Amino acid sequence: MKLDILAFGAHPDDVELGCGATIAKEVALGKKVGIVDLTKGELGTRGTEFTRKQEAADAAKILGVDIRENLGFSDGFFTNDREHQLEIIKMIRKYQPEIVLCNAIDDRHIDHGKGSKLVSDACFLSGLIKIETALDKEKQAPWRPKLVYHYIQWKNIEPDFVVNVEGYIQQKVDSVMAYKTQFYDPNSDEPSTPITSKNFLDSITYRAQDLGRLINKEYAEGFTVERYLAVNSLDNLL
Image 1 (cartoon, one colour):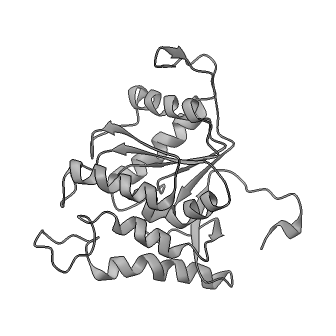
Image 2: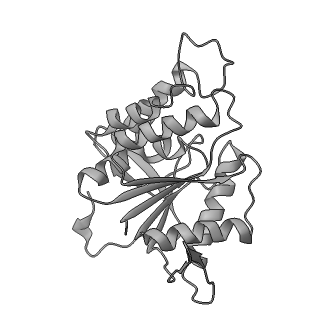
């Protein structure tokens, strides 16, 4: 299946938190979208890799994406090396996305920055004809996405552009809250973490509201880029 957009996250829930509203909007616009999680999130303080798997599936249904896969890399310990790059290249060549979304280039969790660079490097390498890969014993053709964008996570990184996501913020919040073991639950007796507070849950909305305010919209999500953005004419911008 060829996809228009393939979103990568170091952990299940990264994509939802970083660009869930944008994905929901693109799906509503008729785009084919997929998610690939690098790890199972097995080092998370709350829940298990098994609860996280079901939560990820539930979140995918809420967003309406076409596929979701998990590469099973080691949470906290995966590296940007040939072995891991090749696994991501296989996904890129399998789904041939025009656009790839991936983790923030710098963030509180060490996996986010690592995952960002790993996916970015794999996007370039995936276009090299002398790198050979096979999936299900079939040789894959080279494929390089046209665009690689990085969503914003814990840190308030200045975006290079923002997407108007009016009408899709609740779908994003619902997809995040599909991870019932991970986020705010006043009845939970599990340990508290920085992402289990009510403030963190509220931040999903108020951070989107603030970006929206700056473009005279109700909500927006921000992204950073690896190369200049280009438009065909001045009136392409909002």
